[in-house]
Image 1: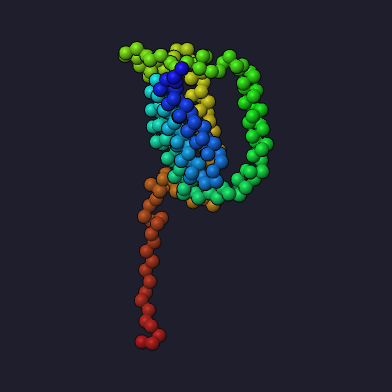
Image 2: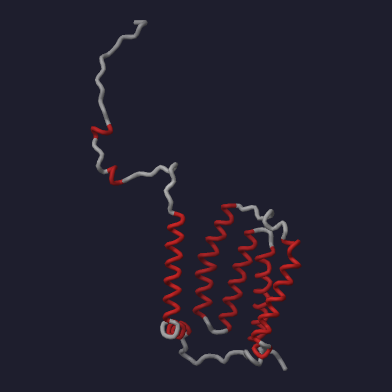
Length: 205
């Protein structure tokens, strides 16, 4: 039985995605980690394209790769954070982390069951008919069946933004700032004083 070309492309992208994800948490250089994360986003977008989720794939590339990751990469390069001391004990705790990861994977496999895995359970999706719009279907589901969870998530994000601004916006005693209301009320008599003095002769004259 020959494997379809879609399955070959999927396993190719999946292998790259797993390798890039492992490289993100294993490399010592933060810039390399950010670049591997960009690679992981690109491969995830490729997998979504195989599932005919074009809107999600383009959004992932434009928003995360084109905006968020570029900003994150600039911040990492400008700050020049020395992460070597932070990752000094990575090799020492690697066996413990691997055991915990295997236990979590085994628990997920036992909870879901073997019947939820395999090509028989998730075959290659059938191509959508002509005129099918992934964006239209996503919007219909999002604003009908998942309308309230979507609004609740938006409110939670708004509260998080307001809380972040409130925590960082603080007045420091050593900070100097200007009050525009006082600046426009100033008069020339308050800023400039002309003093008339008699001329004096130098002692050597």
